[in-house]
Length: 236
Image (cartoon, rainbow, N blue to C red; front, side, top):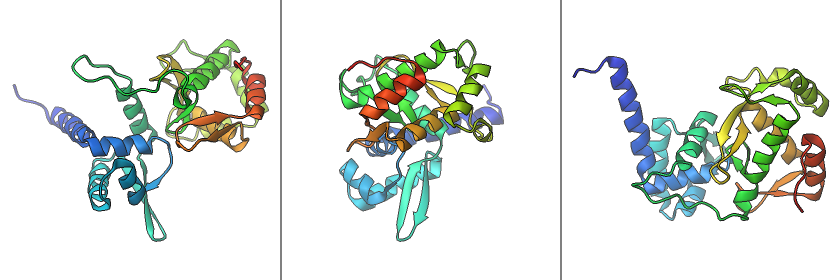
């Protein structure tokens, strides 16, 4: 059976991405970059347990296929996940349990990553799921769509808390989208608004990053602010 040109392109794209992610060192690098923080090749080499030259070769492969981007700054080159779409792909893959593979090494309930972490550039974990539920309960978000929809009450709420909705709508990415949380098996919120909300919580010191760059710590002021702003109760 002959394939059309577009089918060949699609198959080649799947092969390119799949083969790039299949290597253990490259998958370790991608996992490290899911903190949303840029890293140098040397830092990623140490995280992966390989020589700097080996890490550079793997990074070049990831850049070539479009999974990672590189930005020079002074004497260093910094590597990041190429886009929110790539980050969503990686998070989605990690949430799938296939019978013919070993299950992912997920955090145990109650660990730092389980409670609050960054999913690339938005909030995930138990806290992220609670906040998304609070937005639905307060009718700020209407979930009964293919993509969540911001309600009129939601637009007023964003204005009250100082998030510029017009600026968010200038993004090429969706304003909101849901991610299936790989530790909670429920949805948290991503998209441009999810990113803006996490930025705000970090800037207000409601959340601070732990030594593991993905893990987030809820502060005392953050507990009060999140309960007030999102209308949810957090356990002590």
